[in-house]
Length: 228
Length: 219
Image (cartoon, rainbow over all chains, first blue to last red; front, side, top):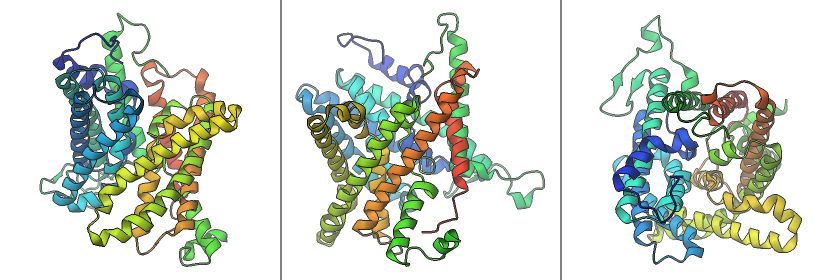
């Protein structure tokens, strides 16, 4: 993952920055998009989902790292899953109290943060072997890197699909006119449908990888993530 | 003709028709992967070869069918009846379901290892990956919303069929994708698009194809 041997120390700052860009979980490894693609047709739903994920990765990384010397190796996966579940339940309750209407739409997906590959991946690869502060920063970075890409996808999908940003909230902005008010613009129904999510994410991943590869070509001949 | 019949009112119709409608909607119209985006990680990483896609698909069908049913038992007979007494069913179900899935997978792994070494090597290696497959937990969570939905009100048999249908839908999707990916291996694709990028585009086209099933069955 980081190309480090377990004994090597890594600074908290580097752990944070690495996860946001260099090792970005989505376009380097394309992990954990399951529970998030479904909510990206509205920016507000995505914001909530990303906030929940950032909180969960940060706090569970911190907790797992604090407990790393007291957890028996054999049952560590089970312990990690339970720790994650506790933080997800906190998110679930907070959303139900403060964002009742939105929570009804995304409830199942909030619960699915538990099985998000990014959360468990970071716990297993990093938090399990590193000090608490570095682990928390690593989790925060993974969450933020993931959120950045999902927000791009959500903005593209909502603007083209509905013509708005942050619909269903007080901060709603009409970016593009509705079809019935303008002759030159038709809303893209495909962006609201599932296939739109796949296409937009593919384009975002393509753009991010092409940009990263352009910068790295002198040192590496192969694409950074490699063709799986 | 059959489609017309199903479209009428499958959920109140005869038992067989109701189960058929649940099966078709779980596997085709509401495909857990292409319409609900669950189980994407193994879908992207294990679809390179038809062989591994087949093994993982079978494992998912089996585990989803069993765990959705076990989870239904726990949810409908323990969590829901206790809710009036102050048990937070909606929060507890998350922990309960993930523990059930993890325990079931662990048990299966040990059992298969005992029974047949051949089966263990063809199916067993996929089992640990399944614990973190969101499709399994997702199917259980969607099942609970159908149980509490007064229009559907899933019973035990309905949940069993739903679990099987969800697993089968995942199986169909990953097999189709593995077939396509083995064909495009030789094609020239821009380097940055290779791997996950092109796979997502294929999945998008497949999702468009599955949209035609929408509206055939209304649950």
